[in-house]
Image (tube, rainbow, N blue to C red; front, side, top):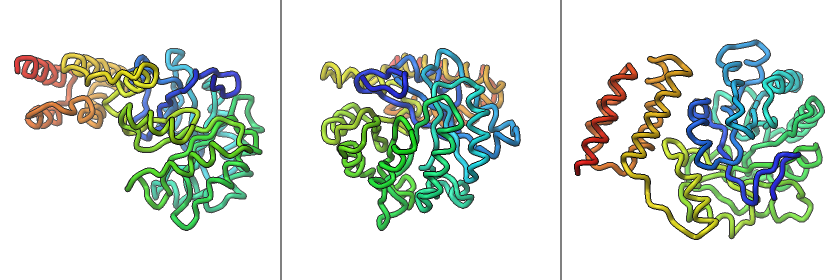
Length: 327
């Protein structure tokens, strides 16, 4: 049984990665029934929280049906991270996660996210401060290094463990790679199999199929897997991985009717959360995933990109269902 503090996550948990502009409550509520064992909010700026910025504070909204759930924060100033941790704890998550992996220039240039991989002393001091400032379990997500010349995750992992964090997720790319190239799980495996590491180690990067998840589990002995981009418009990835790992059964791709049904559910949740226009517009980023594999989908995609109301969008989705069911 994998545990983070007192949170029991099962024998081999699947985690939903904290993706900016993706992991809103609507997305998480769609994902949860398909078997995500632990989910995270979008990563939240510590400076935004302490300034009470709407874009940051609204990301603190969580519900009991999403549990267990962690709130992920990032920042460059230790005092701000302490205060942000206290504010995040008021939202009653199950844990606090620190982002030391975001490669985006806007974040890195402020000395936050993956930039801390170049200042390990500050990373450790910041982590200690966050751990001391909350009664909740604290976890960390980071990368294997800043670039090919400084893959320092082995040293960082031991030092982070010493701060009192209770789990570590490692993305198998350097900051220099951003999201390019292939994730290298070799160092993730070395951290996991380091006899001095006692906390759970989760691997992240390029998991887009049950077969790949099984391969990484067997080859690198990680305690669980975090899934990010592979889940966008594809909540089935969690249930399909579980079925494959548990029974060796490779489930078929979901039928068109189910794809459209879940897409409609997601649309409704998005509109309820953000209002009609914004909810419809923000659904667009998920459409490729929901409609993956549909032949001659382009005209419908163009139509969906021109809808601005719930009724218009639902009408196009109904036409997609009718068209593909009649093929």
